[in-house]
Length: 260
Image (cartoon, rainbow, N blue to C red; front, side, top):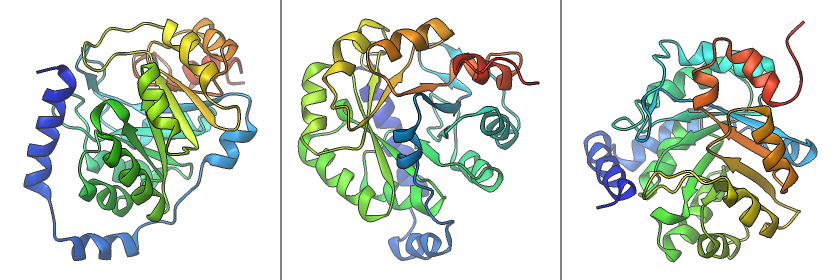
C-alpha cells in the first residue's frame, strides 16, 4: 500500500464516524458564509500565494503546534496571501474542520479546504464549513470521479484546485476544463520531491488557467524558479509555519520585503 492509499483509507474511516444526514448538511450549507471566489484575483496577479495552516505531514512529521490557526491565517492575509489553505485531514496532517471554522470566522479572503476528497459527502461538508475552494488530487481519483467531483464542486459554488504530478495526470486534469491546476513536486505515493516537475509540467498548462506550484518552496529563489517556468501562484505550508515570523516569510516569498 502506498502512502497515498494509506492516507485515503484513514480519511474514509474518519468520514464514516462523522457523517451526518445529507438534509442536515444542506441546512448547514444554507447558513454558511457566501462563497468568496478567488479566480479573478488570481488571474490578475503576477504571483499569488496560497498560505497553508499545516501542523504536520507524512514526510516531515510534526512541523508546528499552531494553537491558534485563525491568528496564523490572519497574519498570512495581512502580509499579502491571496488564499488560505487549511488542512482538515486529522491522522497525518493534524488538521480538522474546527480549524477551518476558526479560520473562516477570522479572515475574509478565500479558503481552500486541503484534504483528500474521495467521497461526495466531503464536498457538501466543505461548503457547509465555509470553504470556497476544494482540492482534487488526480492520483487519488478515477476518471469519472474526477469529472463528477469537479462538477459537484462547481454546482455548490466552489472552485477546485486540480493537483497533478505527472504528464498523464495533467492530461487527465485538462480533459475536465479546469480553472486552477496545481503541479505538486512531491510524489504522494513515495513522498519524494523533485522540483523539475515544475519545469516539465507547468509550461504544458494553458496560459488562460491559474498555474500553481506546490511543495518544496522554501526560499524566494524557489518562487523565481517556478515563476520562470510559468507558475502564477504558489502553495506554501512548511516554510511558513516553521518561520520565526510568518508575516515576514510571506512577504519575502512574494518579493515584497519586510513590513514597515
